[in-house]
Image 1: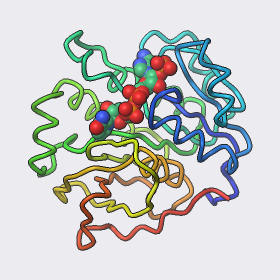
Image 2: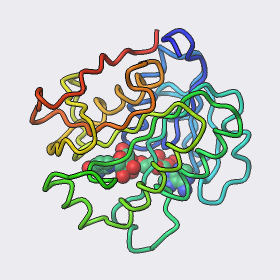
Image 3: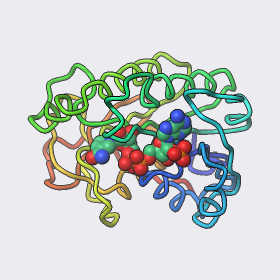
Image 4: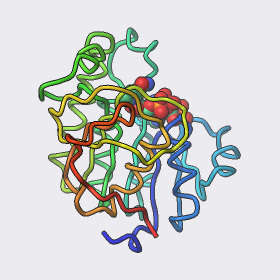
Length: 232
Ligand SMILES: NC(=O)c1ccc[n+]([C@@H]2O[C@H](COP(=O)([O-])OP(=O)(O)OC[C@H]3O[C@@H](n4cnc5c(N)ncnc54)[C@H](OP(=O)(O)O)[C@@H]3O)[C@@H](O)[C@H]2O)c1
């Protein structure tokens, strides 16, 4: 997909802290930005930061995901479970919820899907930070791993971003995005993650790939060297 082909984007997790950064970035670059939330009351706020359309559904108890993804070129997913809710047990939106969205997107012929995952997800060698994630939120990490696998198996061009510890700092564009197993550790702002997620569908070198991502500290020797291109 070229930077000019991305006309309609669905942002799942749009009310979340990364999702809001995704909306802000898409607003001026994409013709139609559709925001997904479980909360109808969130619509005015989402529209004020870049959503052209707001759709209400719950990925764990969906009513009509076909309508949610109808006419969409790319899905950007930043859904997640609050750490405090881990003990409530599965199903988690990180796993079953994301898998449902992937299936609906595949059925609808969506071209691209960018997923925010987390450092430490997957079987590759991991940094001490990533292993700490696994120790603290293991069930969520396992759910994300299942969702990642479902996305890789789906007939959709995908990019999976596994960030380190998220901050609400400013966008720096100074990001190390490295192959899985690069053992990155550190922090990254949600705004920097949002840039990778929005760029992914139109960045050919990011197609069908998974990246660990941090911005502090930097690991220039481990960066995959992708030139992340924003939509027009
Ligand atoms: N915190 C960290 O340091 C860290 C590090 C690495 C990766 N991550 C991952 O990064 C992602 C984004 O984190 P964040 O803190 O930016 O997100 P967040 O603020 O926690 O937002 C989560 C979003 O998920 C949506 N959501 C939850 N359950 C849903 C459901 N059943 N159906 C539809 N939507 C649902 C919520 O939407 P509504 O409530 O509006 O429906 C909300 O917009 C998460 O997957 C997180 O695990 C976090």
